[in-house]
Image (cartoon, rainbow, N blue to C red; front, side):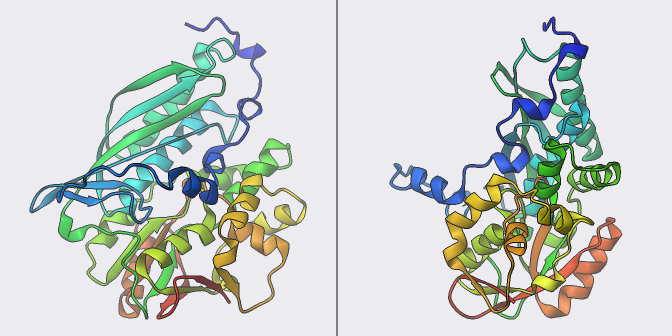
Amino acid sequence: MSNVSPSAEPRLTSLAHGGGCGCKIAPGVLQEILRGRVQLPVPAELLVGIETSDDAAVYRLNDHQAVVATTDFFMPIVDDPHDFGRIAATNAISDIYAMGATPIFALALVGMPVNVLSSATIGAILDGGATACRAAAIPIAGGHTIDSVEPIYGLVAIGLVDPAHLKRNSGAEPGDVLILGKPLGVGIFSAALKKGALDGAGYVSMIESTTRLNTPGPDLARLTDVHAMTDVTGFGLAGHVLEMARGSNCQLRIDWSAVPLLEGAYALANAGFVTGASGRNWASYGHDVAFSREMSSIDKALLCDPQTSGGLLVACAPSAAGHVLDLFRKHGFDAAVIGEAMAGAAELVVA
């Protein structure tokens, strides 16, 4: 039990060297770490593993059921402990929805500096996670805790999907349109928050985005003309579009003017509130991004901005785009068509 007084505690974000999905190891560094590692035998029942950097592992149980398993955890992106817990849990559950699955339960992953944070603060983080799980109609069925230098919270999330409705990030087809479910800018907002430059309206906007569960996922997955799906998180829009392009072996084109941004994100980025993760992202994959228009350094920072609990990215046949947008609206999302898939080299083109 922690004996720290809440009044003596530091800001949560001051205890973390990075926050939210901006904590991710840069994609280029991760690729180097994983290169050459021993590969274990892959059973036929493992429908999705590590081969295309998908959102979750999928293991077939029978002809109509597959279990979907994922984990996600990070350091604080905000100072309010309840909000931090909600964001981290929502982000972890998102990977279940991104596969077209329905979450069924979760396990909590908790690492806390117990000599720095009070029991009340740590409890509020856990309560925030429980709030997100209640919204997803799932229990937290257990977990694991450690005493750590930096506060860490997240979930192992488990779901179920009919293999016939499973959506991967590698199924986009030439001619598909690309639809994004949430605006970009969470990383920019988090950088501004950490430096005391995010106003109250901006904070509300950030919390509304990062705690909104990507519930359209299972409904979208039942549409046969939805060919691929993922969520946009720590590698930014460009990184996750590139993963889809490489997995699908086609060129994906983004109309930058059509990409939605959180209100105020561009102004904050222009004022210098950019995360270090956006630069690391660009260094990792910028060589695979082509531009057919002028892009400022601010545009590039937003293109690579790490999103925490970001939106679903959907590739679907043009004839299904209206239905996809309607499903997003039904779940309370203002989604937007942001690009298309084309035959060609597996790269991202920003127009």
